[in-house]
Image (tube, rainbow, N blue to C red; front, side):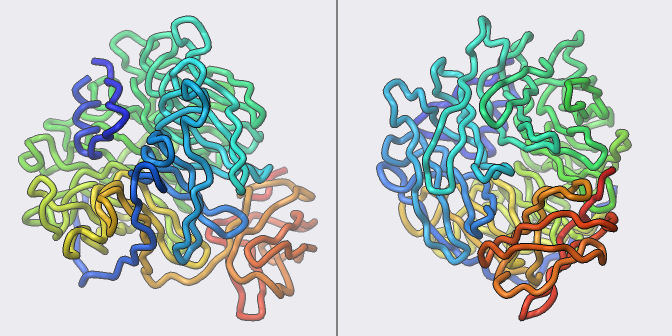
Length: 503
């Protein structure tokens, strides 16, 4: 079945959204004493600052940028920025133009490209009502660079529900959940100026064994290929993991649900993250070992998969009584600077309400599969801490985790932005994460003013301190693959990932 377009004025909860689209192991868990969530902002819906926020991204100016699916001046969503301590500014309200040619209902977060602009998608609107790709400056000047369904039959794709990733070649890559040659979604690339190429149309194989309906974005692995998931399709109709070259050659690496009762998981709604060990990690919304819980469909899993396709189910949710460990992970994972992975579940946990399954959690999981529940939502009176988590987390260079809930909060039940300290220290992040000797590199961090030295795996580099959150440098002669260090008056900061020096 094809996914339906949802009523624009009332986005369903993540769990209902997942059921609607579906219709178209090591299990070690511990719970910690409740850790404090800091609610940075509670949204107030239409016609103010937006409602149902999605994922966040830290920009080179140190602020976090995100979108809301609805609300804002026109009820069709917004782009906002928020400082790490919670001062929010609405930068743009969608559907400002007649006919919503600027797009409407952005379902995913943003990515900052190397040119400094932020890029994103809207799931609807545009010149042909099939969604858009847009760019927006850090100050809020928005340009629609592509409107989907420009081609007859929407062979260029329709309804991009996922965000974008910028590859090492400078182009941006993404997916659409519908359209394409077979109406089952696409993978596309688009230049920063707006030239789009459809790389692959799903359901190209008989029975859609190559997958269908990619609702998540892509990640570029260290081997240069892009990796992603499809929510449906595959050999067992439980979704897939695939890789695709930057030029469009797709390989299905794994089809979910070959095991009885889908104990390996099924229906991944989220994308993947490549960890420092080289493996890719992700979540499935349904399936897992606990098949009798969660309406009999299983409560979801965390898995790892090698770049060549060997999958291991690391954790099955609802392993604890009353699903206090969480259930239905809708979003993907982020690897913290300590090497552990962090994520969210849309339901479950120790909170009250929410379909009698709890209201969602934040968890961490080791690369080997030991899971710890860090926080259960709706544990505060009136759910002022928020609930219904459909977005993943981001680790700020100050060490804290930031995320969003689509409901709850202190205002009008329109969601929150929150931060969570898990005891991790500050670090620096390189943009990009690889490059040849002589390549220009940006280093993002916190309190960088007064930096005295930078080294690429021990090789000293010349640099310019642009601001307290940004340093520009070049890869020095003699550099080799390894961590980047920045020495500041308050200490030495280490990059969260190794920088890969290319030939």
